[in-house]
Image (cartoon, rainbow, N blue to C red; front, side, top):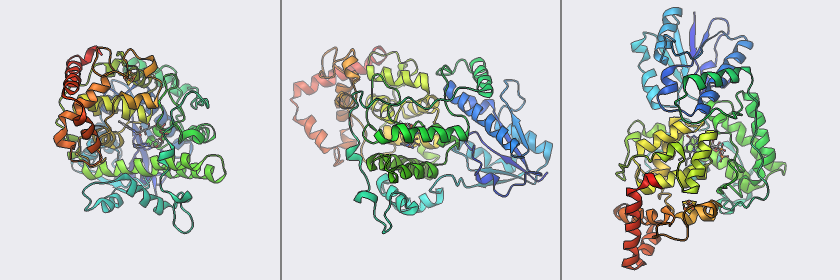
Amino acid sequence: MANLILILGDQLSPTLSALEGADRESDLIVMAEVHDEASYTNHHKKKLVFLFSAMRHFAQELEQQGWRVQYQPYHPDNPAQSLEQFIRAAVQEHSPKRLITTECGEWRLHAQIRQWHKILGVHVEIRPDTRFICSIHEFARWAEGKKQLRMEFFYREMRKKTGLLMTPDGQPEGGNWNYDADNRKKWSGKPPAPSPFRVEPDDITRAVIKLVDEQFSEHFGTTDDFHFAVTAEQAQQALAHFIDFALPCFGDYQDAMSDSEDWLFHAILSPYLNAGLLEPIDVCEATVHSWHSGQAPLNAVEGFVRQILGWREFVRGIYWRLMPDYAQENRLGNTRKLPWFYWTGDTRMRCMHKAIDATYRNAYAHHIQRLMVTGNFALLVGVNPEEICDWYLAVYADAYDWVELPNVLGMVMHADGGYLGSKPYAASGKYIQRMSDHCANCHYNVNKATEGDACPFNALYWHFIDRHRDDFASNHRMGMMYRNWDKQNPERRDALLQRANWLLEHLEEL
Ligand code: FAD
Ligand code: SF4
């Protein structure tokens, strides 16, 4: 036996660096569905179905292409319950020259794999993950010596590096780097939002659904109406569907939320990108092509490319630069337990109910729901960062530590002291009213702040501003908020703080 090649569940790419130079006849690919990885958090049932099914399809494709594959399907009585046990058994059975793998997406697992050469007595080669556009080392070089990191500047570097949306003389297409100002429209039902791309479950997926329903019945979410793509070919169709039907309006309604539409004009590509069924550079190039061919406007395509070339690469760079200490950050000193309704959606706050209910059904909520509804609420009430990070890691089909942690701990909770974002994304109910139609259907009144039926976000927002004066009053982007707060008469301020204190004591009843 020459080499064992370990492929993890989020490494389902034929271009994977671990496969480079491999020999189909003598090398053996190993893949496993193991209990420890499936259960270390309360993963959404659809996330488990997606990953197990995509892994099984990928293993089957590799075999069809002539690779030798040893695959362990999940069974509660498997002797190997962890990846380490699985690899130990494979090493004992095959005595390989080397174990080759690609950088994984999680510090926890990375720390384990780095010890395998000692524990398992096998030479372990960990290769860079070349599917990302910016390598860990390249990001570290860019970040070196900077006190705060700003995505916008990183993004410009990536535009120059890739040439995406750049003119031949090195200028941004259209004259601007960023068209965000055009991307803040409320959606009032027109143009109609396209339905998401759907794949009917095949035999493999149906078997996995049955397995997950039986073995993971206590996990969050439902397997009902599972329609995600589970192969690279289907993921390409999902990309084409997005470009044809949603991309033209993606920019305009990027920040919108709707009481009746779960998906709006979003791509719904993150599960495929993060598991390796799609490659980020291909996705960016395909969307840029649609601009060149006049199919989609520049504000939509630039806005979309920025999410992938900018944000996605940026948060990954931050994760690997700052872990493992990053996960412990809690600069705002938050200690509150996560309210139980995050797991049930059982709250009269319409915006929260809608975001959590969609999450339960779909293992998906779009960016603004994650940031400005469930995230904003957790920030305002001061949930312990570890608890809210665990929630986000569990409930979304696209959630992996490298991408979830910086988004939640840094962007939402501002727990890293502003390393990732220059100001917290705290907002009152007015923001949600401006960007959605939830408030019209809510038990609470968004135009009130102190009364018993007042929108909880309003008083909680001012409580957040007041209790974090030392943290933010000198932040020039927050100065206006403090001036507004200080301008209100003392009775009004007292009433707002009283209402907020009542809300904080009765969170579970909201
Ligand atoms: P679109 O809105 O259509 O965006 C296109 C693509 O851009 C996405 O597919 C994604 O790959 C990328 N992208 C956009 N924003 C980000 C971002 N902030 N960070 C990284 N990639 C981004 N994304 C994840 O992939 N996994 C997560 O676990 C995750 N957790 C998040 C938690 C919070 C609190 C927030 C605010 C954002 C989180 N995001 C996460 C980013 C973003 O919300 C999702 O990528 C997006 O909603 C996925 O849906 P979509 O494919 O329809 O994206
Ligand atoms: Fe959300 Fe407040 Fe609007 Fe209700 S009134 S939907 S709680 S923002």
